[in-house]
Image 1 (spheres, one colour):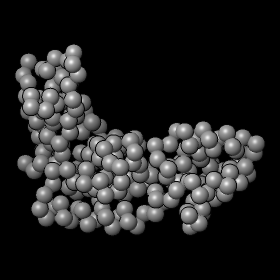
Image 2: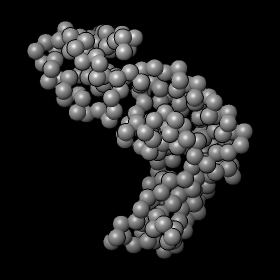
Image 3: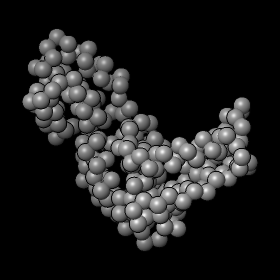
Length: 218
């Protein structure tokens, strides 16, 4: 088996190229993704002690290609998170540059980022020149306009519990604490999405509306 894999993927009129290989100097398997000859993203993972190099290269290459082709909406993870609505907006902004690779690139950026600034840097990846500058400005405007992710839960606990009490009664405190444990960040918007998922229909929308009204108080 080869320790370097090159694969062309054509989707519509767009041609992607994925190059995966093992770097002995760093001990990592690295995949570079290109779109129409332009470097888009570099992803890597360390090799486990008991892994065969050839198998690790092939496995990582398959994972990258499958994620690239799936177009699935990214899952929130790591220290940084974005509300689902904002992820949709980010996809709209970057899709002219990254095409079907957009969702995969966002997921990788979210998993590595700790702030909006580092998220943008991770997202831009290997882009350079005019394209990088244009996309950077668009993302900064979009993320600056969004205020929900910056709102902290810490100073809103009493107000949140009061609202939850209207919908969950005596279960409000336990639901509040359980939801906090599931969060990846201190984002009010992420909290709202998770806690409202326990309701349906008009009640769910009503809870979202009441909780989002707190963002102006933070």
